[in-house]
Amino acid sequence: MSRIKTTFAKLKQQGRKALIPFITAGDPKPDATLGYMHALVEAGADIIELGVPFSDPMADGPVIQKACERALLHGTRLIDVLGMVAEFRKTNDTTPVVLMGYLNPVEALGYENFVNEAAKAGLDGALIVDLPPEEAAEFSALLTAQEMDSIFLLAPTTTLERAKKICAATTGYLYYVSLKGVTGSATLDVAAVAEKLKVFAGITDLPLAVGFGIRDGATAAALGAVSDGVIVGSALVGKIAELEAEPEKIAPAMSKVLNEMRQALDKLPG
Image (cartoon, rainbow, N blue to C red; front, top):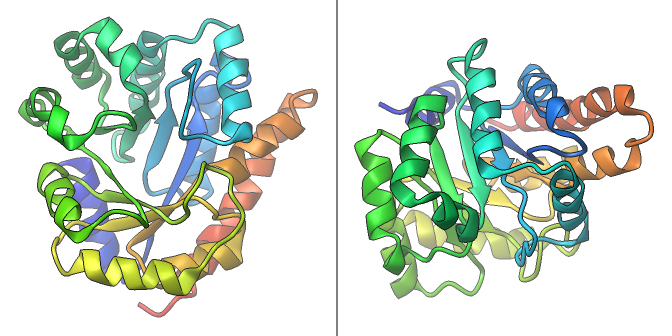
């Protein structure tokens, strides 16, 4: 059983929800990321999503776009991100790490090379935003062969017919985009999210994690109550931008945000 499946199984047994923070690797500089990853685990992270910097992050809002720019200023490449995962694995062999990014860097490295290097690094899964399941068979097969998960997105506009195809192609967990728009958007309709998740839960046994629009403990709890887990990105990455001139304050600030969400989620009925 993969680390991701093990994590969700353990959480289900405990009656708890997954807390999945996202940060952009290499932001604000490459040597900071490893420390942030460990700090997030200490603050309550169950899984870490590590963003691969890209010059045209089309699904991301201004906060994460700027994070990509900061990381790219230091020349952070996909192979460097895998190196960060490998360093993390030297002292943490239990917390799943998922790479989230865009197809171009993976294609540049080559599917087989990427998967081989990812396996060596101890990666657990990949979510390639602009790789639809219809075009992902080769990539997903390579991941499966190395016991890594393929993760895909569901959205408010996803039809039931298409959702069935996405669920069939996915392993690990499904990432439900709670809002129409880019990351960092503010308007959140919990009732609408709950309605959609109920439909999707009827066609898959995979965990459903919700991202976009989660800013604090209250929003984390609201979405955690109707899902298997929550994904938080902009609320953390924004702290990096805010405190770039005072780098020693970044990890504690992100930890504070995440710990508030952890506490809120753990107060939910089991």
